[in-house]
Amino acid sequence: MKKKWTLYWKTGILMILSVCMIGLTGYIHQLPLPAPQTTETLSKYGSRGDEVRQIQQKLKNWGYYNGNVDGIFGSQTLEAVKYFQRKNGLTVDGIAGPATLRAMGIFTSSGSTGGYGGYSESDYYLLARIISAESRGESYTGQVAVGAVVLNRVEHPSFPDTIAGVVYQPGAFSAINDGQINQPIAESAYRAAREALNGSDPSGGAIYYYNPDKTSNAWIRSRPVIKRIGNHLFCK
Image (cartoon, rainbow, N blue to C red; front, side, top):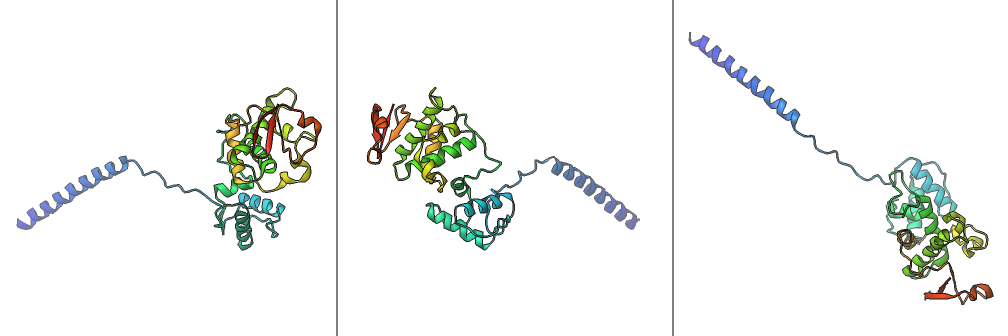
């Protein structure tokens, strides 16, 4: 009889434990799952893919890299990225992070056109490039002013109505003729381009500017001057 009661007792305990486990399992299933951890993907040593290929091509075009454009971030690419970073005042870590990619003019698929005053990313990139080429060595305000002149021309009826049209209009900018447009873009020029695209205009509405120490053109010297910023006179 004692053995029978012991068996009943053990069976009851097992049933209670089973019910508890079923209830606990259901509760666990109802708990919200933790958000997946995400990390920013950066091109660095060992990376492979299209972004690495873009980096290699840019560096090869500018003379920083002489290896194969194969999409493999090896030791040659690493040294080329460091060389580029060193020459452009960036953190020299060999990692193609956001600042380095911006300086190369490479925009990832996650980038948006937001923050460019309605213009596209390619417009932003081209504006930064012409700012860097035309106002290298000028103050940050002077760089924003050069960008504003480009945008003022886009809005002016006497000029093309796109940034590309204004930048590449024949005879408009000396940087197109002397090859400065193809030089690496200064980091400050990206910030200046964004500020100009968002409405900042230190030029006071100018549609022309020139360096009086470097030009003898009588026509540009006849334009009404609005203000001087650094080495440039900004005029109507």
